[in-house]
Image (cartoon, rainbow, N blue to C red; front, side, top):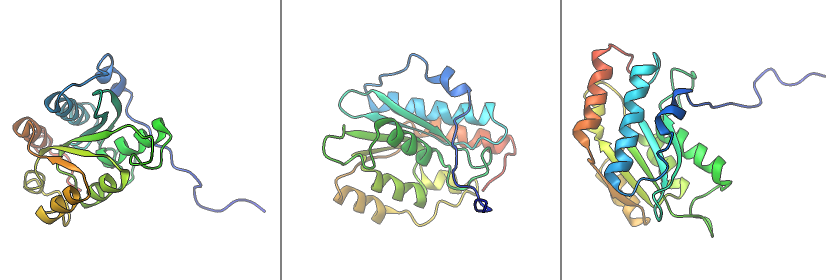
Length: 192
């Protein structure tokens, strides 16, 4: 008997240029430095990848500022609807640290910086990942003005996150993050 007629594993790989962008940038002491990296990842993804969406994210240790992982939107490039930048960064952080939850005993305190407020899927993934801080650049309205569907994330969602102990900081370097979204639109790239 042979195996099933469907895949038994999924492989996720970041674009090769990621190493060049993050080389030597292992520590980020403040929220603007962290956001600048997330925005740069988003921008590079738009410029270097024909199928690269305009979103970038990175996971950092909150106590040291050490970069743990990065992610870029890979939905079109890897033909997978869940490969948003935040999900990719969180999945790679779980893999690197060998933790199923960043809230597990002994886990280092972590934060997620994302070039745009997360969609409904990414917001849920952020909450369940166990990160203690969420840092956002562009807003949901900024992404939706291009036609992206961000789902039912609103003020109540952020209130819920804060009530669960997740610190939320929004609109960090917003104009720089919006510029990446606009560049994506100027290039006529697909909205999904």
